[in-house]
Image (cartoon, rainbow, N blue to C red; front, side, top):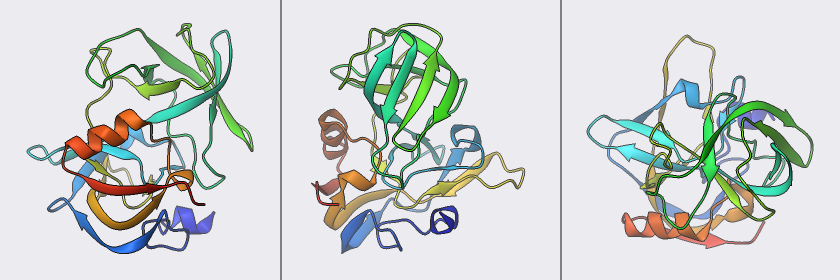
Length: 207
């Protein structure tokens, strides 16, 4: 866990999310609003980012796969013990549809409980979810927060320094394999969105 907290889990770190070399970043870096990062935790390396080049801000496209549902209690899968649930109490989520631009029904997260194998979240409303569905972070327009155009190459760690932003690089290309089982959920829809935005990544099911 110390390795993660020190921000070392990365494309080439001590618990790498990929194997290869020659990765390319967007020019300069981006600010992630600190409110998007769970208290005392981090956003995992590999999470898709919606980068605004002009504002120099990056919003994480938080996505998780549904494992089971009981009313408004939803269990979401953890990829590995090295990947935490990215959500924060108070955030709004929606069922991931066929695209990343259509509005839909949203619900607020009122509680989060972590176990060794999954994370259970309590929602303010029933989203008619089923096992195998994905939930995605929604904005005030009841749409996914945006279309991703990069991924985070390192864990984005929340530090108690009073800052309102956390600086991060944004990767757009990598010459090698990115391990899907070491990063947050990456549905085909999101892979396609990254490709269409100009990113060049090769995904692997290897552990």
